[in-house]
Length: 257
Image (tube, helix red, strand yellow):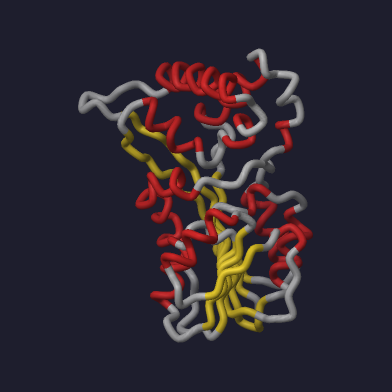
Protein backbone atom coordinates (compact mmCIF):
# COMPACT_ATOMS: atom_id res chain seq x y z
CA UNK A 1 0.00 0.00 0.00
CA UNK A 2 0.90 3.66 -0.34
CA UNK A 3 2.28 5.10 2.91
CA UNK A 4 -0.25 5.81 5.65
CA UNK A 5 -1.45 9.42 5.96
CA UNK A 6 -0.94 10.49 9.57
CA UNK A 7 -2.81 13.76 9.10
CA UNK A 8 -5.88 11.96 7.74
CA UNK A 9 -5.69 9.44 10.59
CA UNK A 10 -5.54 12.16 13.24
CA UNK A 11 -8.75 13.84 12.04
CA UNK A 12 -10.46 11.46 14.47
CA UNK A 13 -7.73 11.30 17.11
CA UNK A 14 -10.00 11.32 20.16
CA UNK A 15 -12.16 8.48 18.83
CA UNK A 16 -9.14 6.45 17.71
CA UNK A 17 -7.32 6.90 21.02
CA UNK A 18 -10.22 5.75 23.20
CA UNK A 19 -9.66 2.00 22.55
CA UNK A 20 -5.99 2.40 23.53
CA UNK A 21 -7.09 3.98 26.80
CA UNK A 22 -9.52 1.16 27.47
CA UNK A 23 -6.93 -1.49 26.63
CA UNK A 24 -4.20 0.03 28.79
CA UNK A 25 -6.55 0.19 31.78
CA UNK A 26 -6.81 -3.61 31.74
CA UNK A 27 -3.04 -4.23 31.77
CA UNK A 28 -2.33 -5.73 35.22
CA UNK A 29 1.16 -4.32 35.73
CA UNK A 30 2.12 -2.10 38.67
CA UNK A 31 5.42 -1.12 37.05
CA UNK A 32 7.41 -1.69 33.88
CA UNK A 33 10.98 -1.07 32.79
CA UNK A 34 10.59 -1.81 29.06
CA UNK A 35 7.57 -1.36 26.77
CA UNK A 36 7.04 -1.47 23.03
CA UNK A 37 4.15 -0.06 21.00
CA UNK A 38 3.74 -2.12 17.82
CA UNK A 39 2.14 -0.17 15.00
CA UNK A 40 2.56 2.98 17.05
CA UNK A 41 1.18 5.24 14.31
CA UNK A 42 1.50 8.96 15.10
CA UNK A 43 2.32 8.25 18.76
CA UNK A 44 -1.09 8.79 20.36
CA UNK A 45 -1.05 5.32 21.94
CA UNK A 46 2.66 5.52 22.77
CA UNK A 47 1.98 8.71 24.70
CA UNK A 48 -0.51 6.87 26.91
CA UNK A 49 2.04 4.17 27.68
CA UNK A 50 4.67 6.80 28.52
CA UNK A 51 2.30 8.53 30.94
CA UNK A 52 1.52 5.31 32.80
CA UNK A 53 5.06 3.90 32.87
CA UNK A 54 7.04 7.12 33.01
CA UNK A 55 10.31 5.50 34.11
CA UNK A 56 10.26 2.73 31.49
CA UNK A 57 12.27 2.50 28.29
CA UNK A 58 9.58 2.86 25.61
CA UNK A 59 10.01 1.99 21.95
CA UNK A 60 7.55 2.71 19.13
CA UNK A 61 7.59 0.56 16.00
CA UNK A 62 5.82 1.25 12.69
CA UNK A 63 6.36 0.65 8.97
CA UNK A 64 5.10 4.11 7.93
CA UNK A 65 7.63 6.95 7.58
CA UNK A 66 4.84 9.53 7.79
CA UNK A 67 3.41 8.05 10.99
CA UNK A 68 6.87 7.82 12.54
CA UNK A 69 7.65 11.43 11.66
CA UNK A 70 4.53 12.55 13.52
CA UNK A 71 5.33 10.29 16.48
CA UNK A 72 8.89 11.61 16.78
CA UNK A 73 7.67 15.21 16.68
CA UNK A 74 5.04 14.45 19.28
CA UNK A 75 7.33 12.53 21.65
CA UNK A 76 10.93 13.66 20.99
CA UNK A 77 12.20 12.00 24.16
CA UNK A 78 11.20 8.51 23.04
CA UNK A 79 12.75 6.13 20.55
CA UNK A 80 10.96 5.11 17.34
CA UNK A 81 12.02 2.64 14.66
CA UNK A 82 10.77 1.73 11.20
CA UNK A 83 10.10 -2.00 10.95
CA UNK A 84 7.63 -4.53 9.61
CA UNK A 85 5.96 -6.41 12.48
CA UNK A 86 5.45 -9.42 10.20
CA UNK A 87 9.16 -10.24 10.32
CA UNK A 88 10.34 -8.20 13.30
CA UNK A 89 12.70 -10.02 15.66
CA UNK A 90 14.44 -8.84 18.82
CA UNK A 91 16.70 -10.14 21.58
CA UNK A 92 15.15 -7.68 24.03
CA UNK A 93 12.40 -8.82 26.41
CA UNK A 94 9.53 -6.51 27.36
CA UNK A 95 7.21 -6.03 30.30
CA UNK A 96 4.54 -4.77 27.89
CA UNK A 97 3.98 -5.37 24.19
CA UNK A 98 1.12 -3.10 23.12
CA UNK A 99 -0.55 -3.59 19.73
CA UNK A 100 -3.52 -1.33 19.06
CA UNK A 101 -5.35 -1.73 15.72
CA UNK A 102 -2.45 -3.35 13.88
CA UNK A 103 -2.48 -7.17 14.11
CA UNK A 104 -5.60 -7.37 11.90
CA UNK A 105 -3.31 -6.56 8.96
CA UNK A 106 -1.10 -9.61 9.63
CA UNK A 107 -1.72 -13.29 8.77
CA UNK A 108 -1.19 -16.51 10.72
CA UNK A 109 -2.22 -15.31 14.16
CA UNK A 110 -1.41 -18.54 16.05
CA UNK A 111 2.26 -18.32 14.99
CA UNK A 112 2.32 -14.52 15.32
CA UNK A 113 1.03 -14.59 18.91
CA UNK A 114 3.46 -17.34 19.88
CA UNK A 115 6.33 -15.22 18.53
CA UNK A 116 5.18 -12.05 20.29
CA UNK A 117 4.70 -13.83 23.62
CA UNK A 118 8.26 -15.15 23.32
CA UNK A 119 9.45 -11.51 23.48
CA UNK A 120 7.83 -10.98 26.90
CA UNK A 121 9.57 -11.15 30.24
CA UNK A 122 8.13 -13.52 32.82
CA UNK A 123 4.99 -11.78 34.07
CA UNK A 124 4.91 -9.53 31.01
CA UNK A 125 1.75 -8.66 29.07
CA UNK A 126 0.74 -8.69 25.42
CA UNK A 127 -2.11 -6.17 25.06
CA UNK A 128 -3.99 -6.23 21.75
CA UNK A 129 -6.97 -4.44 20.18
CA UNK A 130 -8.25 -5.24 16.71
CA UNK A 131 -11.19 -3.83 14.75
CA UNK A 132 -13.81 -6.55 14.34
CA UNK A 133 -15.96 -4.74 11.80
CA UNK A 134 -15.65 -6.62 8.51
CA UNK A 135 -19.34 -7.53 8.75
CA UNK A 136 -20.44 -3.95 9.39
CA UNK A 137 -22.03 -1.97 6.52
CA UNK A 138 -18.95 0.28 6.37
CA UNK A 139 -16.78 -2.65 5.26
CA UNK A 140 -19.29 -4.79 3.40
CA UNK A 141 -19.99 -1.81 1.15
CA UNK A 142 -16.28 -1.28 0.43
CA UNK A 143 -15.96 -4.85 -0.79
CA UNK A 144 -19.18 -4.68 -2.77
CA UNK A 145 -18.21 -1.49 -4.60
CA UNK A 146 -14.75 -2.90 -5.31
CA UNK A 147 -16.32 -5.95 -6.97
CA UNK A 148 -19.03 -4.10 -8.87
CA UNK A 149 -17.16 -1.10 -10.27
CA UNK A 150 -15.04 -0.59 -13.41
CA UNK A 151 -11.95 -1.13 -11.21
CA UNK A 152 -12.95 -4.72 -10.32
CA UNK A 153 -10.08 -6.31 -12.26
CA UNK A 154 -7.52 -4.08 -10.52
CA UNK A 155 -8.88 -5.02 -7.11
CA UNK A 156 -9.39 -8.77 -7.56
CA UNK A 157 -6.84 -9.74 -4.88
CA UNK A 158 -8.19 -7.48 -2.15
CA UNK A 159 -9.99 -10.23 -0.28
CA UNK A 160 -6.62 -10.77 1.41
CA UNK A 161 -5.84 -7.12 2.12
CA UNK A 162 -6.93 -7.49 5.73
CA UNK A 163 -7.16 -10.66 7.77
CA UNK A 164 -10.44 -12.03 9.08
CA UNK A 165 -9.66 -12.20 12.76
CA UNK A 166 -10.45 -15.21 14.92
CA UNK A 167 -13.19 -15.85 17.44
CA UNK A 168 -13.01 -15.44 21.21
CA UNK A 169 -12.47 -19.18 21.42
CA UNK A 170 -9.60 -19.02 18.90
CA UNK A 171 -7.65 -16.35 20.75
CA UNK A 172 -8.29 -17.94 24.12
CA UNK A 173 -7.02 -21.31 22.84
CA UNK A 174 -3.99 -19.89 21.01
CA UNK A 175 -2.87 -17.86 24.02
CA UNK A 176 -3.48 -20.65 26.51
CA UNK A 177 -1.40 -22.96 24.31
CA UNK A 178 1.61 -20.69 24.89
CA UNK A 179 0.98 -20.63 28.63
CA UNK A 180 -0.63 -17.22 29.08
CA UNK A 181 -3.54 -16.19 31.25
CA UNK A 182 -6.09 -14.39 29.10
CA UNK A 183 -8.45 -11.44 29.63
CA UNK A 184 -10.64 -11.24 26.53
CA UNK A 185 -13.54 -8.93 25.62
CA UNK A 186 -15.25 -6.98 22.87
CA UNK A 187 -16.62 -3.44 22.87
CA UNK A 188 -18.83 -1.86 20.23
CA UNK A 189 -18.15 1.87 20.12
CA UNK A 190 -20.83 4.11 18.65
CA UNK A 191 -19.41 7.29 17.14
CA UNK A 192 -21.79 10.18 16.28
CA UNK A 193 -20.31 11.68 13.11
CA UNK A 194 -21.26 14.57 10.84
CA UNK A 195 -22.94 12.64 8.04
CA UNK A 196 -21.91 10.04 5.47
CA UNK A 197 -18.97 12.15 4.30
CA UNK A 198 -17.44 11.93 7.78
CA UNK A 199 -17.59 8.12 7.68
CA UNK A 200 -15.76 8.22 4.35
CA UNK A 201 -13.14 10.53 5.86
CA UNK A 202 -12.73 8.15 8.81
CA UNK A 203 -11.94 5.14 6.61
CA UNK A 204 -9.80 6.95 4.03
CA UNK A 205 -6.81 6.50 6.34
CA UNK A 206 -7.49 2.84 7.20
CA UNK A 207 -10.05 0.45 5.71
CA UNK A 208 -10.42 2.18 2.34
CA UNK A 209 -6.70 2.39 1.65
CA UNK A 210 -6.26 -1.07 0.10
CA UNK A 211 -9.14 -0.31 -2.26
CA UNK A 212 -8.22 3.21 -3.34
CA UNK A 213 -4.41 3.06 -3.37
CA UNK A 214 -4.24 1.05 -6.64
CA UNK A 215 -6.66 3.41 -8.42
CA UNK A 216 -6.03 6.45 -10.58
CA UNK A 217 -7.08 9.84 -9.14
CA UNK A 218 -10.22 9.81 -11.31
CA UNK A 219 -11.13 6.26 -10.25
CA UNK A 220 -10.45 7.11 -6.63
CA UNK A 221 -12.82 10.06 -6.76
CA UNK A 222 -15.49 7.88 -8.40
CA UNK A 223 -15.01 5.15 -5.78
CA UNK A 224 -15.38 7.70 -2.96
CA UNK A 225 -18.60 9.11 -4.47
CA UNK A 226 -20.16 5.66 -4.84
CA UNK A 227 -19.07 4.65 -1.35
CA UNK A 228 -20.45 7.83 0.22
CA UNK A 229 -23.81 7.34 -1.51
CA UNK A 230 -24.01 3.76 -0.26
CA UNK A 231 -23.00 4.82 3.25
CA UNK A 232 -25.72 7.48 3.28
CA UNK A 233 -28.31 4.76 2.68
CA UNK A 234 -26.85 2.40 5.29
CA UNK A 235 -26.44 4.94 8.11
CA UNK A 236 -29.62 6.98 8.62
CA UNK A 237 -29.36 10.56 9.78
CA UNK A 238 -30.42 11.07 13.40
CA UNK A 239 -32.73 13.92 14.54
CA UNK A 240 -29.69 16.03 15.47
CA UNK A 241 -28.12 15.57 12.02
CA UNK A 242 -25.51 13.01 13.09
CA UNK A 243 -25.00 9.47 11.78
CA UNK A 244 -23.99 6.69 14.16
CA UNK A 245 -20.93 4.66 13.15
CA UNK A 246 -20.95 1.30 14.93
CA UNK A 247 -17.40 0.05 15.47
CA UNK A 248 -16.88 -3.34 17.19
CA UNK A 249 -13.37 -3.97 18.52
CA UNK A 250 -11.91 -7.16 20.00
CA UNK A 251 -9.48 -6.86 22.91
CA UNK A 252 -7.26 -9.19 24.88
CA UNK A 253 -4.51 -8.94 27.48
CA UNK A 254 -2.35 -12.07 27.71
CA UNK A 255 0.06 -12.38 30.64
CA UNK A 256 3.04 -14.69 30.53
CA UNK A 257 3.58 -16.63 33.78
